[in-house]
Length: 179
Image (tube, rainbow, N blue to C red; front, top):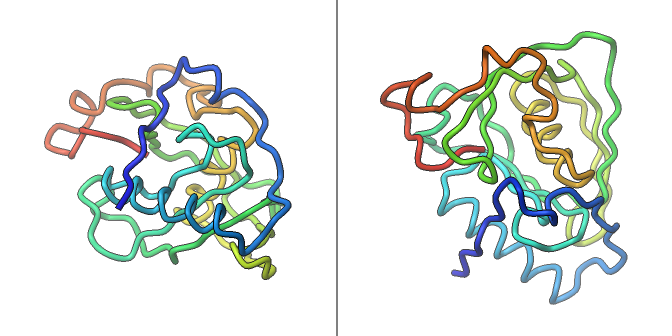
């Protein structure tokens, strides 16, 4: 198990546009994915992007199936490895929801996201992924894919009266890390 250091907001590597994956089913890609999974699980995250551990590749992982103390009411999202993602909004509807981030520890904010999206890309073997999702699943995908274009969720906040420390906003919630 290799738990990697998660970069924090302010690190310029989080603001870069990540490079596409060009070699699938390689030892290097499998090792990266293992490190991402181990790091996400250790931090109780709902997702993690390669740039968050300093790797400049378009790779995100996400998913929740078991109880997560940071998202106790979240619906199940299938564990997914997604390379070179493309997100297409399905309609104009947005919804606001609370988000946190492992790269912005201890803070949460209300962030608008497309309510329903289609995402496409590839798994680690180069097999195509094409899903249409909504709600929490759509939010997690959009949040993680933002990391690939150098965006952190505070850059999407519209109302800063709904932005603050997790321990103040949600007393009792596991505020050690966020995502």
